[in-house]
Image (spheres, rainbow, N blue to C red):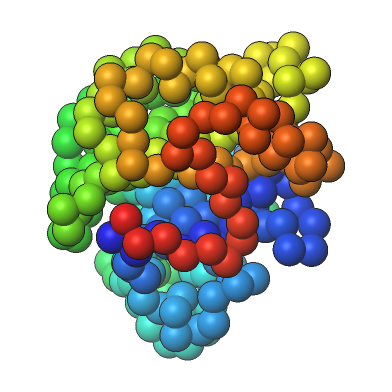
Length: 252
Ligand SMILES: [Zn+2]
Ligand SMILES: [Zn+2]
């Protein structure tokens, strides 16, 4: 499994794009950054997008991707996968014909550029050659993590979450864990209020894991606190922890 970081930031600045991770060129985890870094041909190769939750920094590349595909005259290209709450939010508040066209009916309702696929947390489902399971996590809106298995590797992507016990019950053996740390330790109160983690909260979560993952890849840092968070993570000396950067590629 090849994991390419399109964006792994908890905000937006030059060189710091919002969350999106491309697996093997075809399966996207969250859609916060697509056209800002992928050229046209690479955008067409995306077949499925797993969305963790409807916050803008995790979905905002999707409407523009749909437009790019339609402009090229292609259709029926991309499955947008998420819970009923997430897909409902996209329909009601984003691709509602006002903020953006409803690309689940364009160019035709029979053969649209985006197909919404609703999934239920807790049950395994297939996405191409991958086996995927969603698990509810602790955030300010309904949100899930995804466990993805394929090619002999297993990856758990948490999306945005505060401390969350059910997540670790479904972790099993992992080649890699992609987990967020948004704030430094000093802002634990804010992190708890907004459903995010600090380095110390991460340390507590990792102790709940049944087995240590091969790699622990940290995402969603607020760039304003980047140096503080990375220094605090380093001071904890947690085995296997690496802070991701936009553009990184991992062989898992
Ligand atoms: Zn969020
Ligand atoms: Zn976020």
